[in-house]
Length: 144
Image 1 (cartoon, rainbow, N blue to C red):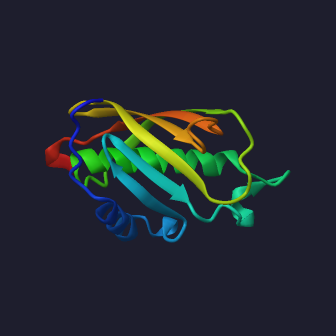
Image 2 (cartoon, one colour):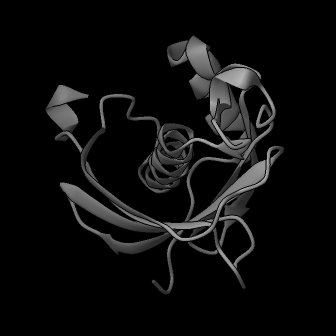
């Protein structure tokens, strides 16, 4: 999407996450905000809780990363609205990600008053390990 303006920085997104989502503290970090994109890195990708048999990052962990990247993207564009919620998440797993840090790059496809549609690639953009489409519902101003 052209001409999108981010209203929250990576530091502000991280602060919001600490305030409202303590469970992801130290798990992910926002590495880029700008140009209609947000990049989030799973830094804890070698922990047993994120690996499945065969030594690869589990599907639920990849979905969490894609959802978090889309959420941060939406908030970076509309401001601190913690009550924005996922209404749809579809993911295709294409390659086995090796244990370790894993990055998700989310970009906005459509930003409306009530819905935002995001596209998320996990891993190397030239050979992604997964591709997700995520839709968020943005509450009206009187419900934020």
